[in-house]
Image (cartoon, rainbow, N blue to C red; front, side, top):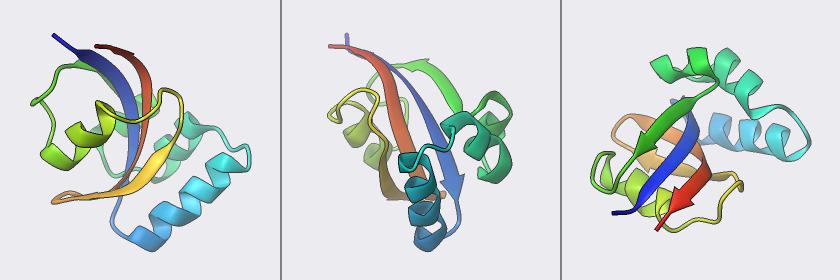
Length: 93
C-alpha cells in the first residue's frame, strides 16, 4: 500500500496562497511560513502532516500527494477547508 509524508500550509484565499508560494520559491523556509500563516493545527509542527495512505485525506489533497514530485511545493490546491500549499516529503508506492 502506498504511503506518503507531506506538509502543508492552509490559508483562506488563493491570492495569499500564491504570495506564500512565491516567498518559498524565493528561498523562505516552508516550516517558518507554515508556523506564521497556516490556519491548520499542523502549523505548530511546520505544517507536517506525518505519514498517511490514499483515502485518508480529502480527494483534492490525495490526488496531488500521490502524483506530485517529491520535495516540490504544489498549489494552490483548493479544498473545502481553503487553499493549500503542499509538499510531499517522501512517498513509497
